[in-house]
Image (cartoon, rainbow over all chains, first blue to last red; front, side, top):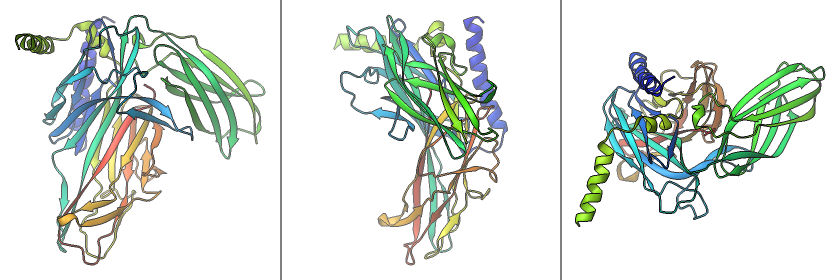
Length: 282
Length: 164
């Protein structure tokens, strides 16, 4: 599909989203942020993010850039690690990419383009540099309930949407080092530990696919999850085993760079990784 | 001074120019992520000395949020919950949120939403049409001699894709 058509389609989908929401049930507060991953390069040094107020009330939106990436804690839970003052070894772009405007008040249905402009330091080595864009939206109205007792209560809502920003300069490449792959049954669930590091000078973006096959090779369970490896991670996945009969099984893992949610042109190629482990389901 | 003016003018000019088509294309990294509040948690009328509990199943008073994004994608949702509503002179109405005060569903049905502890993160996937619905209950406990006035607090809902 030609680029201009793709852009038109992207803009149309934004407009359609806003129109659909406006026609739906009442929305008190809402913010649409698009896209959910921004890719910039050293040649153009620019990018953009769309904000749309899809609610019926004015919204105040602020944009912040902060260094961060998906990480895992000791329980294998994923979170976005945000670092205010990254040290010089971290490939942070947060300090030299600016957003314009950084604050806007959006009327209902209003769309705002936030332009991103990079002013990287001279002599920046080839590689990928990262930031997170944090869009914080606050409604203009706080619902306050007046009480007979004289105690009035109201709760306001702040919506924070965090998306990724990748800035690429020169030759960038990536790959995946699988460091851990274990599976066991815990109650009615399959628990899988997945550990990985990244090769090269850019983040690995891809998809994990699991297939649970019985002794006859029939697939009895399939699961998929998008994966991003910036720094080493150790994730714990839990999948339901409902309907899986007791027996001997093989869990097959495939990690590829296929992504259904991202434009494939923004995904760096890498060698796929395949592994398998045996386990008993009781 | 003149150099600074020229640089500023150049920067402003660059920002006002249309972004090149191929730069727009590079910014196209997926579908929009839309977070919505359909209903804020509503404790209704508060009476001094009487605790008010709102169930997450209460369709009229529970907080109701909706996320729309890329289908089947994994998201992390963090709720920042206030420990109290703050009123005149710093007076507080304590709020408590229990392990069963959060609910989530991919079909929007409040009655069959799965429970989660809203004090911890929810990591789950959006539905096959890219939807996730979150419900929030909680409890407000005004003191017996609660000072009259307006009390307010802020709930923060943070959403992030874990796969980018």
